[in-house]
Image (tube, rainbow, N blue to C red; front, side):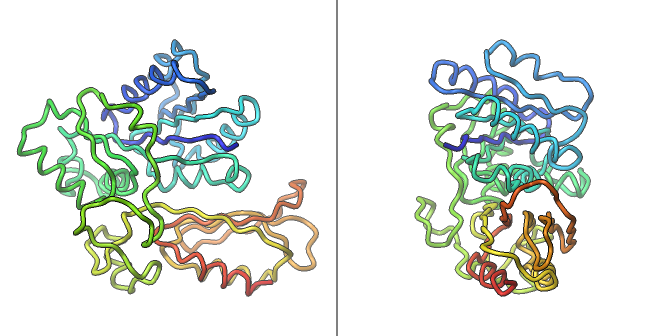
Amino acid sequence: MSAQVYLLTGYLGSGKTTLLQKMLSHLRAQEGKVVVVMNEMGEEDIDGEMLQGFGFPVKKLLDGCICCTIQGELTESLKEVIASVNPDKILIETTGVADPIDVVDGLTHPELYEKIDLRGIITVVDASRFLELNSRFQSTGALVKTIRNQVKYADMLLVNKVDMTTDDTLEKVKRKLFELNPGAPVHLTIQSEVDLHTLLTVSRLPEHAGAAREVVSYVPVQKTIGRMSPMDRLKQSLGMRTSQPSLFNCIETFSYSFTRPVDAAKFEDFLYSLPKNVYRAKGYVLFHGRGELISFQHTDNQVHLFPFENHGQKMVAVFIGEGIDRDKIIADLETCY
């Protein structure tokens, strides 16, 4: 059985660690093995020491962010945790500057894909600072993008520190959150206090237009998944409104198992031709006439291929994106045989 993974994200000081402590207090009375993975940017562990008393194993990833500089360490740590502990639940607290897309990239390594079940991305929003952090006039462009992505790709939003926010500001925050992510349920909290049963039953937002979900009736739904116009794709990349709104801004993943070797040139052309809404593609493949396994990575129209020896014969591709047309990708991929 795969381990259930809960990803906690949100900007620095929003209340993630406080929420994690409450989750661990709740889970201590439940059955099942739980492992905590904590990521801090500095060389010293600050928050992790506070969690030792809960009795759960804590894996600490220091001096880098799991969404970029130590992403590979996250993958290796999860492989080690699953092999040694075989946990039922894994709680991952990211740094405040982690982009959810890149963290999900680290979670979907081909060797991990069937061993973990990402139950949801839970984003904690500091209501007292969100408007300032989200402003292009008061924050850097990179920070604004990260803050927005933490909201945009959340499956549940906790609007924290509402006691430190005026009613007018809180309404503005809620409107902006709804604009960025109309599908995610929103909980208003003080000191990250929330019903833990509700929190742990979080589920990924729908990946297909036909998926059933109770949402406000006037929320627009994208009907042409993966076929946005070039202008709409450009607008979406800039964070602007599009004529075809994306489907609840859900990060999707899916895997494909190769049945036999493929043509090297055709496969490389396939990777370069992937649409822009496929943010990552990676895996292992065999080429005609080659004996060794090939590891491949595709990011932002950059393709890297290199031999990967002594890895067995597991041939799989993992795709990460938003509004992915799976049937089209698989059909294109199968022309490479």
